[in-house]
Image 1 (cartoon, rainbow, N blue to C red):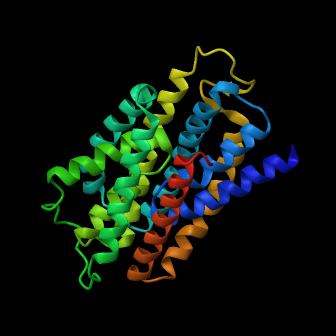
Image 2 (tube, rainbow, N blue to C red):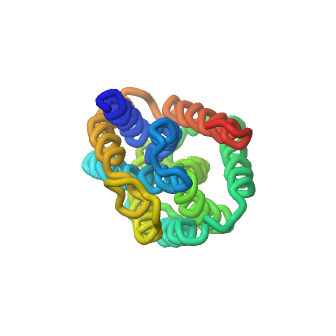
Length: 273
């Protein structure tokens, strides 16, 4: 049991570092390991995947909230951007946690993979940003891409664990927002995602049978405590690391992260995880 708790905490530390560096919430650092451990312990049975996603969303809420506070103190968060995207992310998260179970999982994964590939390609083909946006001009935050990046990040995030930054960050970078502003804004949006999606999984699983002891709906409390504790430890290190690298390098490292997410998703589609 001590070994399992240690893995939970270590995974949480990594999730905290990633969340604070890129504003992604850390879901992809948590979900694969959590699913593996729950399966090995034979916890959850037919509800293992629901417990994994529900617990991951709760961890995202805690870790991203702390990351958002750190970024706010560092004056990285653009409140206008947060308010602009908040309704889309919230509605997408509620719809995803409520109705996602009736949609074909392969279709959702394929759609998500498409947007990841598009984001990576756009990042690789884009010119180096030599003049950053001041942060006050939101005239470019509109149109189909704005609506899709906001709503789909909430919807897909509530189903598969990625934070809003996976879709929102490439959009903001195209508009020449700095990585610091992008990450600070996306950290706050990731916390919003965790709140609405996590709440949906708790309520949705409240009356389910066959759930393990120490469950609150589809939230598995022992895993949540270990992962969240580790995340709170890791977040300050992620912020410190981001301060030591320049904007361009951080943007490239973010593309590397997206590539890792893509590999995980492709592996998952082919029956792995």
